[in-house]
Length: 403
Image (cartoon, rainbow, N blue to C red; front, side):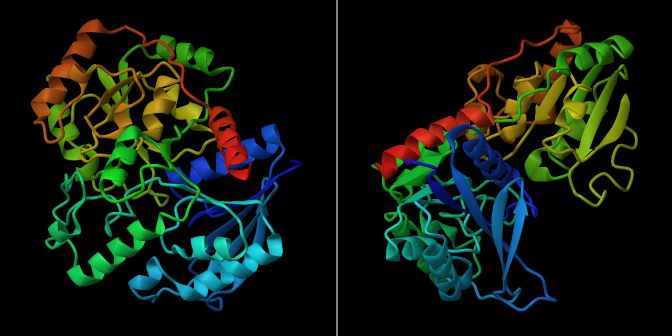
């Protein structure tokens, strides 16, 4: 097969990048083009009030053409997962672009019509599940009180306390779980995500774990890391989760507030995009040296990781994967983390070292005390899959589907 053509469907895509799953979609697409001879075209969304609704704007970034559909802000509940106007537009694009394969990533707000549109033109689909949008209308299984739902499997009847309209939520759940019979294969970023999805109604025969890769460190990273440690040997912690309870920030703050020492640094990334995460004296009264770190990109993430010795990942919900954890491990950064679902499947954390979700600050503080006692104790660089590795896995899967 010469230069197979993939139509990649994702709610966001460059130049309008947002979220870890979008980064994965973009990076794998670039690796498929560079390393495996694919042609990739993207379809994504935007919501611009000054433009006519359902207008399609053609853009191009890094050699990938992106057809951006402008959606109205006042769409109805069911339009977020089953939008007939969107289905028609996707069918026209598939007809005109004639891809060999549709790769559906995060299709929330795009809807399952992508499966119908592809079937109408005899194009096979690979679906990549990134989060729990398919089985939870709140997308992340986080309840209104900002605690993790904990259902396994998800039973829609048990969602009455979270959703505004249970019959509508049930219609959504039934539609989405029925629609996933259409893709030729379904990929998941972790065994946890696969097991929960299949237990909740996804077909078992078409699913497989497709591990996310990361941007590996640059060739000068080790030198930059060593230079920082020589310049400032204090134990330095990093955090990328923002000031949210569900990311464990209140527990982190309380653990450090009572640590009884100040010979350390703490860098908190401001990923808000508008510099608001750490406003209002978020670090006031805490011992040690605390500072915000600017939001970083795939191209300059080494600037952050070269400054830290430990990444704190204290998520209070079961996530499908942990991109930051793997980025840290690939750079010889220690990780303190909770028992947070797919984030634990990197293979380097002993079960007894995982902090239970909901554990008090003292549990984290005990691990911090052990790190201080052992410092300096550099962590080894771990073998972690790159985006090139992830693309190679997808190439094998795509060629299997395409025969």
